[in-house]
Image (cartoon, rainbow, N blue to C red; front, side, top):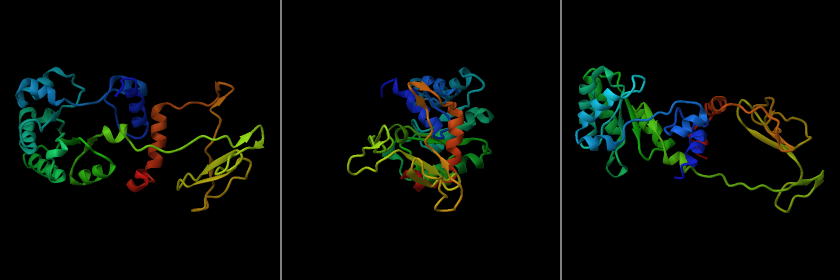
Length: 256
């Protein structure tokens, strides 16, 4: 991926509802601290999981969560136990990044890790998972006991929206080509059920066809004669707006 794309993708991911981003430039673009965990390379360089976890704990700043990667050499359950016994109360979580080629029943692996941590008194240790996750897989793994998720491919290579821009009105004259609806339009959205209604621009505001509530106009001027005329919200404000809408949607709605 080109480095210049990372801030754009991270910004889009953050305002879309993700809790954080990992790249330095992406975090700077949205005004948050970058978040991430140790890589497999760290453990491989030490050739010893415990030494790598302890070195991470020794060197990293106190405000950095101690998340141990627990699938480099041994069974995930056994490495999670090793990490918990090595760092004890200092351990915030364990991360499972097992390749898809050997995941097997990943949900069952998570259940095993949760059980073994809990029975040893490490209920405070969270379980993070990553590697080939999407919105449907996250739901299954969450139900199995996973607390947090690292998603990359499903966000950066997300399905695209197929759309085109067409001239439908020229200085007040209707000019749409065949297959297109002529004239300037307004999109009216119901704030309760998020149903959209498209009408001619000068038409009166409609009621929501589903719940009969008042609708709000979605198309508002952003740029006039080359000048930005709208108040541009900060990434955090956009994210809060998005999350309020996502609360009303199901996983199936988002997927489509």
